Length: 184
Image (tube, helix red, strand yellow):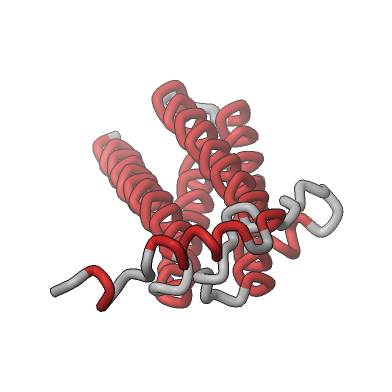
């Protein structure tokens, strides 16, 4: 199979690269609806920011005999969610958009909710619910992106894997707390 069957000739690639150079990473080969992708990315950014804030609050507000280890886990998750937010913001800029960090409307842009929760068990449950929301919404975004934006799709796939780990860890914490409550 010759290269010409699937790859443009070198001169065509070079010529296309010089066109619309101000668009940066967005070339003529980008086939996704950029406005829709930027909207999805900004909603995901809001989701991650809400998760950072909720996990931080829970980290500091965790009380009880099991709280030190659970609070530590909340802090780890918060830091990982901040990393996700940073990656998403970088991608928004790569696509020529502007990351929306405005606190105004943050909770309405976010897929997940900011729920303070009172008890350690409720904190774990609320964080688990938020992780499950992220898993479902990011899975849908991945399917939507398909081959139209493989870079954003890969980023979401990597973030999704971490969100699934978070959900698994939180489910284990919840089970561990329930089992210790039964033993007493």
